[in-house]
Amino acid sequence: MTALGGLRVIEIGTLIAAPFAARLLGEFGAEVIKIESVGGGDPLRKWRKMHEGTSLWWYLQSRNKKSLALNLKSAEGIAIVKQLAESADVLIENLRPGALEKLGLGWDVLHALNPRLTLVRISGYGQTGPYRDRPGFGAIGEAMGGIRYTTGTPGIPPARVGVSLGDSLASMHAVIGALMSVLRVKTGQGEGQVVDVSLVESVFNVMESLVPEYAMFGHVRERTGGSLPGIAPSNTYPTADGAYVVIAGNSDPIFKRLMHAIGRADLAEREDLAHNDGRAPQSQMLDEAISAWTLRHSIEHVLEVLEQAEVPCGRIYSAADIVADPHYQAREMILDTRLPDGTEVKMPGIVPKLSATPGQVSWQGPALGQHTDDVLRDLGFSDQDIQRFKAEGVVQ
Image 1: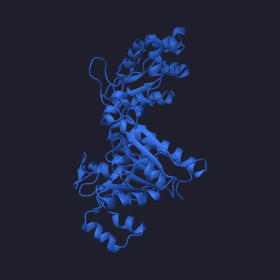
Image 2: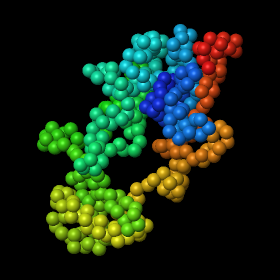
Image 3: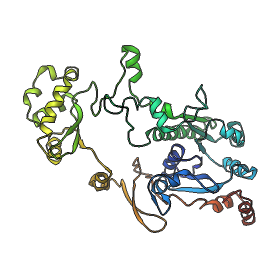
Image 4: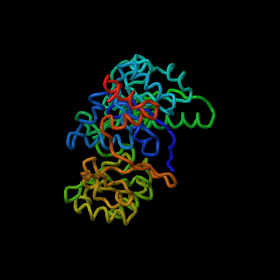
């Protein structure tokens, strides 16, 4: 049994946002039919590090999906999409606003075909508003959503966080919206609806109290490196062997334990440092005291001492650290898998962990059009129909 067994999802998307959302649904049992363009398919197939001509990212992003290679410029291709939509629960797309309508697949058409269908639309700025027609990528969502401005070191240009965070946040909001809509339909509370997800708004939604701080106090959050402004002590500290450790000693009892652990009982007992409102103005002094201690010890010693003192801390992990970590392994977050040619490769595990209906990986990202015949047969097309479609360039 799976959490989303019986749920049919159609994906009309490329690269990151819509495909990641569909992947998350597929990992928990939804049938995901990914519609790709005839000839080239999703550009993600050629992004970043590749093995034998196919991106490793593709194998991860598209696991558990069926690939239907379809020509959406043909009338028969659009007719096939409509037929799929009649039996689908969710259709996820990340085309430019209006593009689906130009294909003849607007909400009015889809809703008339299947009133139970949920249409998830991911775009740069949303389906309405003065910016709706602008092209939008995750990086722009991060820039305009507020997170780029607050990321990095003061005095130098804002930094990227290292991954396509804007796309991933939009994907997760898309999944939340899709499941809320599906639940409404499945419980008989109403028909399907449009879930409108903006890259910019998905980033903005995680920006904590950024706006009320500005609106009430005129305070603009700035880049602060590894520290947590207004909450002390919480920062990134160097160790004697060139590593870095994040230490979060910002609750009152944890602060006292931290100070005792680093040999600064004098700071632990100061009344003016007993609560955060007294520590925050003196964060630089506290950071210097902690750094003076971490710089005298190796990362392993620092972690051992602080873990014994029950102080939240962690080494800053690289990919190598993650793969080697016993906790990641114990939690099945590093999966040993095989690519289609038999090559062994490690892939990330599945989040979240469900006790009764856990997610699973049934196969890695498929070849372009690998499931075209199966999907069409399931729709009732004969082998002769399929051969004709292929000869006419409708499918691949």
